Length: 544
Ligand code: G16
Image 1 (tube, rainbow, N blue to C red):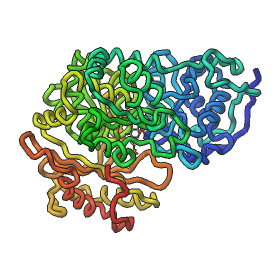
Image 2: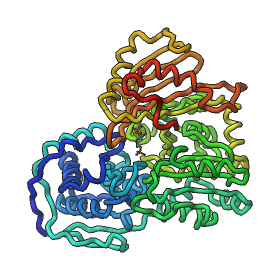
Image 3: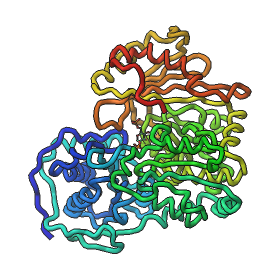
């Protein structure tokens, strides 16, 4: 084998965001852009030499080219084995589980998650560590620093064309590339967590499911689990074939991008459970006939009913939610007498808690839910948890929710996404809010009184790392809260997210529309932030 040391130029823009490096495809197509980032990972994390790595992703446009680029760098940097998912198709949760199960030193996940695909869309690379979880903030900073100063790359010369779809062991210079099928192991893992016999019986009894795989990576996994193991009709899976451009759609499971699913759920003859997952299979959206389950409610309901699910019968060690996520889970944790951790946005913050055995379930408002079975969020896992819950309780999704609200009250919740072309203006809005913080308590804004306000800072209870400026929290009277935060997954401009929530206690009115309940908070948020005056926008681009 010969390795060439190639002179390269550093790229200034390889700072990973909330979940890895994400840019337009055109940016990734620049010569040595992929190689530069992968080499920066090796330089920042020297322990990778000699071990094995997992490789795969959501199968989006440019994946196959990027896999080949990755393999050339990986082979030249002295890795022994790469476990490459067949066709490069590997959901993010399956990747996290494979890294851990195979004792790999880490893995490269080629995904831009829920971002659009295709030649005009986005591409991404994420490096996960040996636990299966996302790289820590410190490692991420080291990788970024290295990517800015790098001036040479190690590349394998004459790298052979690996047949990505052919199972078996292929040689790439001295590197063994094991092309494997990740689906059976994932299906087995799910069978160990949930009562598949009970679900099968419910399916035989007429339980109907509609799962939208959004032409993304989850399709083959969903087919194996839902159809082959649980006996659902193959027609229960829509858009099950992975496509490089996700069929031209935005692979993001939310009411805006899955409007068809919402419409189907509103029909009288709708299936019992409707769900979708995103590009890389880590997000999920859950609906029932005539009702959508908000991500915060989903987490709370699963925690409250975990004792019904075989994998969680032993009880929950604790739970965690990201700061902007609704506080429905806090009420369940209080009743169960277990800790509830509030972390900054980004799954990596949960990873430390999971690794230290402090939490069993965690979730985020951005349609992410998971448990200690993986160090990533897991869309299909959430669907199966709901399916098993319906089978165990013999209730509908609506009945499960209503029963939950009757016991804990309802946390009305909405997120506004303001798409701001000029990122400087978005920063101005946030800076303006932060400047007001010391004088906000006690102030009345548009009829609502501020009880407390701060800029969220988090001290990791495991390693003591402090993360500052993680969003602005405005606590209002009567269990209401507004949170402002800049998205970390944009690839152009900025998205300013405004999160609105209000608790209606048990015995209160739980049947109202969230948009009505939260309208006064939206006015207060607008007035406090001066967002329209600063950006010229009249309203958010989306309300989710
Ligand atoms: C990523 C992270 C999530 C996080 C989300 C937030 O999700 O993995 O932990 O909640 O970003 O996105 P934003 O910063 O835009 O609000 P994903 O599914 O894109 O990997």
